[in-house]
Amino acid sequence: MKTNSIFAKNNQRHDITRMNQLPLVSVICLCHNHAPFVRESINSVWKQSYPNIELIVVDDGSSDGSKEAIKECFNGKDVSFIDLPTSIGNCAAFNKGFFKSSGKYIIDLAADDCLMPERVLKGVNSFIQSDAGVTFCDVLNVDKDCAPLNTHYKRNQKDELIEKVPYGDVYLELIKRYFISPPSMMIKRDVLEELNGYDESLSYEDFDFWIRSARNWNYAFTDEVLVKKRIVPGSLSDMQFRSKSIHQKTTLKVCQKIKELNRTKAEDLALRIRCLYEIKQCIVQRNFSLIPGFIKLI
Image 1 (tube, rainbow, N blue to C red):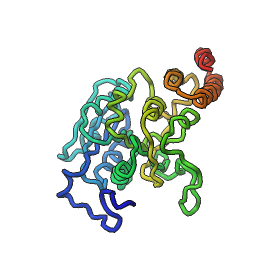
Image 2: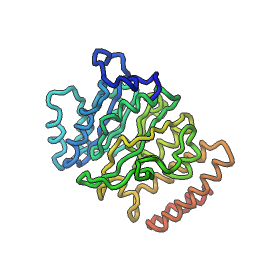
Image 3: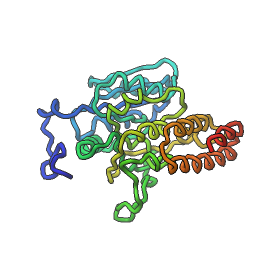
Image 4: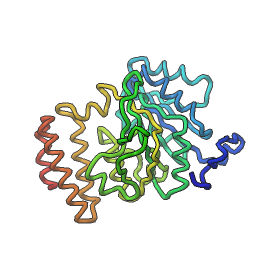
């Protein structure tokens, strides 16, 4: 760790009297029928080693007891709770929290995922040490009971990274493939303000956010496992690859945005390769009506 980090390597004690001098980090916890998991997710925010955190919980019309579970977690703590009576979708629900937030840095935390204790501290230090608009890290995938499955990036038995992870200008690489685990991200507020938050016309946010933000901002990578991502059947990410998934329509819209944002022949080639891949996915998922849209981009 460089000496310009918030807490020097040889002195990890946190002086709470300095809290007001530290950048505020807003954690926006999004919940939709996550009653079995939301307590653990919120508690992971309380357990952060970094002291200056604002927690905003948004319940997107849950009907499974999540709202009651959320309220039980507050215990008199200063938390903003946005209780939506009906579901408005992940993108719009996040924006409700974001536009209420004040932090210099933002974490989008799904209520079935958890932050490890050093996640916020490491993220803030990553911003200080780079010119990035977004930082991301490795993730431990766990099952519904929080039993470890694997890490997002390949590691050897010594827990050393054994694959190359892109960072810096990652726009071209993000057109080609998904390589970032969404819950691993920490975002500079300036980025989200420039984008006016998530695009609420879309059914999922990460691909669109990556593309629009990476066009103008660098990404920094922290080679540490700092987040737990729960793999739950029926989750938003799981439904993305089901038959006749509505999310492929969003993917097409993002590819259309890429066409407008591209500046080089290499980027156009990457989009063509991406569209060929998505056409195959349309066939597998029986979304035949979307195929002409991808063909037009090719």
